[in-house]
Length: 498
Ligand code: SAH
Image 1: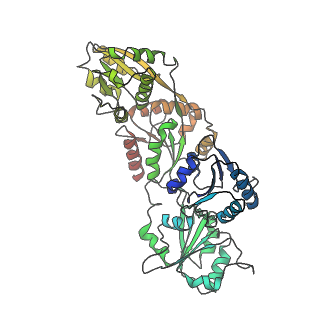
Image 2: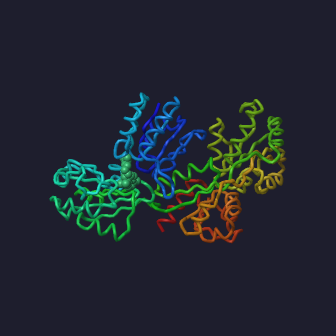
Image 3: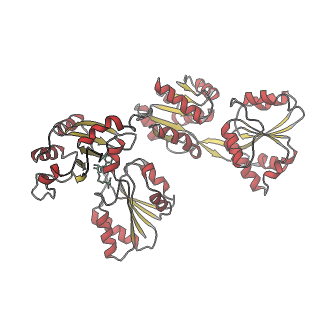
């Protein structure tokens, strides 16, 4: 099956559920330049990805070549996805591709997308219709030179026939488009807006009038992709804008975490309007002893009076090894369980365990304080990362416990190329970098060098991470008061609000 799929206008959240499902089971994806590249993350890693869009310096496939490619791939019997920005049938040439497939008796389906023609004005707070103000709208190509005799646009009718006019691909031709509209009876005073890279963190909106638009676009050097909207509903932006007014709108924030964990923090920052760049400073790897101590501890798991988890990763790896040994939670029996941090406790709940102790403040010191009167004579398993501070085991041993410190994982610098991000940092394009543990700081410094931190505003999840930054002579601009992802996000918001 060949699917002609709309990818939406840019915000990856505006992809349809059906499009996502189809992408997840694609064998081949043939795609254009998309405003939201993240959408390609849904495509299975082993699928073939073929870029056929325009980009500087690269050869562009002609439409006929794309049609032929689709037919050729379509004959393979695999799941082929032709992914296009917005909707495939709104200036997307989806019709031509469908016809070419039909002529070759190949099965295809159309998956409509959220078109930029409606969604981009919406993200600028401009409705294309509004009761009492606009009862109709037109979507028009701005790509055709209006002065050419073969232009298919009937300007004398178009200029006044509908209330809202939405031009796609019209930025280069704006002087001629506006002239034609005015010449054919649309008032030069009609409100108009130009919206560039709508629905993305780079969205720019400026409001003007039909007669001034062309000169202003020229003056501001606005480049595509942008939409030109003409009509009285443009005035509603003042009341309806919601997207480019978000507290972190337009801020570029670097999130340094192991890739598997980045999503929650990234999602929350994006919801507040930030452009998030994920820098997977660390990744989770097996401990250096390849689970020798971990497996030995699991073998003797029934002998422990108490098990302490210091991170969600530790919990996950512990249960991995338990399963690997052919065991399940029943072996934990009467053992007391402690968790440092609410994320750790939450992860335990996923495995059906409610921790007996979760220190009110998320630091090892607090847990030691909380447990000091009850651990005498206990045998304790501390399941944690290979490299971590020794305060907790030392304190517990002082109070008469025997503590086995067992590594269940280690964090490593991710080997991904940090060059591109480094360039962005050095050219001042990053507004803030977040650190969610000491090892993210250490690995970031390893990857980028010390000096790189000097040019950046930094946010730390708590005092320990802040201390590590200070070790590198960086005074963090933001330190969360509650040492959780939500606490960090709240602190960033407060900082931004001043
Ligand atoms: N099929 C697409 C349109 C393709 S034509 C759709 O339904 O949205 C490409 C034009 O769409 C661009 O020149 C620009 O005018 C408009 N466009 C697409 N995405 C846009 C965005 N995020 N912001 C502003 N304009 C956009």
